[in-house]
Image (cartoon, rainbow, N blue to C red):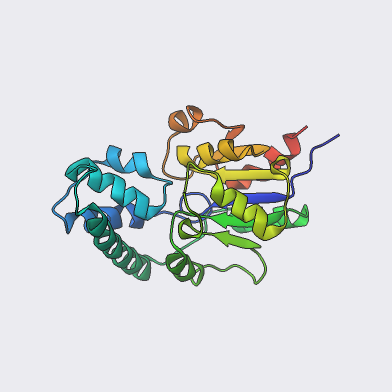
Length: 230
């Protein structure tokens, strides 16, 4: 008998929403206000984390985790990051990944509820959603990094999405993301399907090293993944 997927929990930037460089640029610019330069490898390591947590991690690498000003520096750098990111979106706009709208419609036709989860805070998500051509009711829930006590790799955003959509068993949940932290969160949640997509921040090799059930090119392949579920 085929196992029933009742909820799909999908990441935003790099998975369902195009990341055209605005997020890395905002990190670089915000940290530069503190006189800090980071390498692409350092940034890749924190992709998928709550953005405030990512900034704190990057600052701690330079300042030391015991620096008494770390909390204050994190807060001010995060505020700068948010401003730079909003400015980037204002210039470039925000667009869905190719095939996302059709993938969401396919999930809906299958009777699957849809939740977005993200390391962005709720104010940033509200701004992002204003750009997107999603019909009213296309998304059942949105869970943000500031909605839970711990972001990825903790599973709490997934659990909160289940709570908001009335899904009681992780055996009926599919999680989808473009980073190793997305996959770690799906694994820790015990999701029936834990899918990595190659449309975003991390390479196939990096995703394959993380716990997963499937790795596909993009969300356009989610129907194929569900059909393969025994």
